[in-house]
Length: 35
Image 1 (cartoon, rainbow, N blue to C red):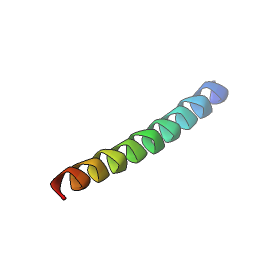
Image 2 (image 1 turned 90 degrees about the vertical axis):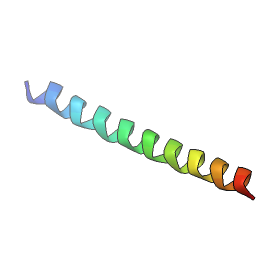
Image 3 (image 1 turned 180 degrees about the vertical axis):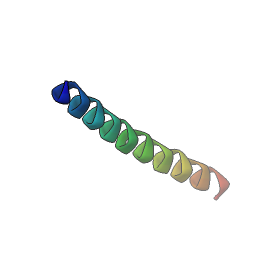
């Protein structure tokens, strides 16, 4: 049971990192377009 829980935590962390990076990229693209 703990094993599955750990995997879920790991997946969440990876997902958060990916979305965070994607948000930064999207923000950068918007600022570039605004320039």
